[in-house]
Length: 604
Image (cartoon, rainbow, N blue to C red; front, side):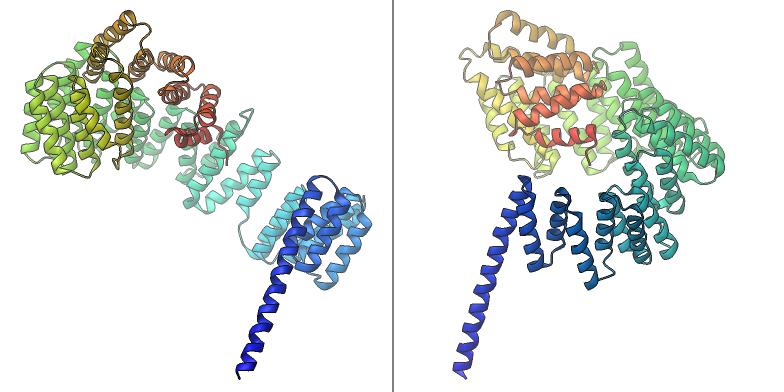
């Protein structure tokens, strides 16, 4: 028994070694064959690939063998080889298509047609085989037969190949046929709207002469006219208008749907929020105003009313120096609204009103009282209350009460230790110390926050910590850092004129100081907050090019790209993102830059 086991063991070991040797030899042959192929030594490559195919039966080796014979114009050998293989499996449609291509390449067009049609006849009853054969035809640029395969397969299997046909027509740049197939598919499968949108987004992004937009719009309008009750086409048209920046037309389409169905208020409110996110404030207020005009008895009135005020607040405060009369008018509107909306729905209104009072009208006591009253009445969710408490700490500091500010931040930090709002409270404590010139203590707090689970807080903490380390330790008098910290405080308190004056004083007093790039960067940030993206881009670009060797270079380059993107200067934005990726591979902005670059180029 033991002898039999030992014998079996040795036989198995020998077979294993033989197998390993065989695999190793095949790998070596495969590498050598590929090298020959890449070096265009097709005769040598063909010999090896034929050998590998005989040994492994792998289709990949067979394909390379046929490519080599094609490059050598040896169609006779290809034909003999394929006919011999077909005797083993006469239903292998890949072999049949390959044979058809051999005939096609050798000008035997009737024979080629016969083989292609035979392949279609074989695959038409099986969905996966249809897809495989069509893919092979497309690979050979035999689009006519790929189309025939899809059509024959659709008739025989009842599977809808509309999307596949649409993609085929896209390859041929026949946009009308492409859209016809996509819309046919959408009509049968309205739940696939997001898939159609994704596909069209890619198509439009790669449309060099922008001819696709007119085709999409005209064909959608025709579908809507033919079938006005099918809302999916309206939704796709609205999406297309939005993608091409025609927000007003999209909004008009939503109005038309609402008038026809009397149930479009929610869609209009959602679109108003989209307009708000895209800084189309006037159109957003128009959308919310449309819903509000339906009367207070409308179930969507309160939502539209609150969102309209929120947009008005953002629009009014998005300027560097908002008009005081406009601010006072907005303050009155927000105060009046508190008697109209339900208390639990008033969070955005309270937040906006507190900011108006504290940061723009210097009514600190009123702002503090409003926050304390809201928290005391338990109006909002715990996380909303914590955000208001952070705002309360800011206002204490603005009102020259740093101790109460620190205490408030500490309360939030203790109540939400490991949450983003808790980390933000600690970050605000560190910034308060920085504003007041306590640089070493601030840096100690910031170093702890570098490991924050909140990416934004961690990045901000790291930047401020490095800024202090790079400049405070070099500035033995602390004078320049004190001036710069004061400028940052003015930015925080939205006193932008004072911030500009303070930053300019650094340049005037210390024109060769290492903080000059930081001064330019801060000025760019102020312009960006005020919506002057052209001016912001100018300053960011100055930092990125003049101070390319400094720590802010990648930050400035990323911000510059974002500003150019907002200005719709796509080429400049793409160049900047690409430069960031190549010149600063270790930057924390590299991942986001790649994502933004993909969005701009729509690379699949």
